[in-house]
Amino acid sequence: MNNETIAQNLRKTLEFYQEIGFEYMPFKAVTSNIKDSNESIITSNELKTKDLSLVTCHSSLNKEAALKALREEIGDCKRCKLSKGRTNIVFGEGNPNAELIFIGEGPGAEEDRQGRPFVGEAGGILTNLIKKMGFKREDVYSANIVKCRPPMNRDPEEDEVSTCMPFVQEQIRIINPKVIMALGRVAAQSLLQSKVPISKLRGRFYEYKDIPLMPTFHPAYLLRNPKDKWLTWNDAQMVLERLKTSG
Ligand code: SF4
Image (cartoon, rainbow, N blue to C red; front, side):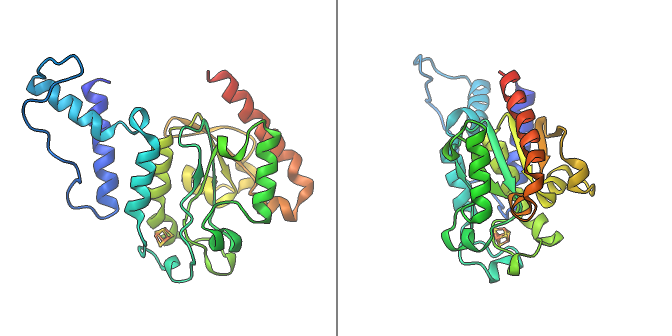
């Protein structure tokens, strides 16, 4: 990793922690007499580089630990009004090294009760899709744009989405999947910063921070409109093709 990349990563990390309310970084300063694995003394420039890499290198160090730290940062979050009606925060779950990540809109009643994403009736449709694609639920990662259930399953409001978005953005950054599937209008429009309806967005790839993103219908929509399941299956096949060719 060159110094420019390290600086960019550090900037992103600092901005993220600032957005979620940190006034200083919770990392210990590294002092003298540090040796690398070859037992050679590290010079001051090398030390800076290695130290920054430790701060920023979620991908190679330990994605699981980074996700755990993020969950701890969220804590018993009351940053937006959705906190008032929730039973559990639904952080997200799955393989921290997943190549494929599914991002939905927000927890429903069953997800809120269990504190897990996509476990209700609509979750069953997603699980079937994942199996049909040749994966198990634990192979992929799933999360939502907002982590607390909107009352009466209404769409999350703009202020709720913008308050909670840094968390899902950080989850995606830590996992760094090969492909994102955005499930439904709220997930697709929020990640792509678009106002285009999901029926027009779906069926082709976009880029979210250099990661290919495929918008498709939300499983809850497919529960009400099973005739459109084949369209989501078409989208899933394009995702499989992209996963195959991305090495
Ligand atoms: S929806 Fe997100 S920002 Fe709002 S209270 Fe829940 S975790 Fe916090």
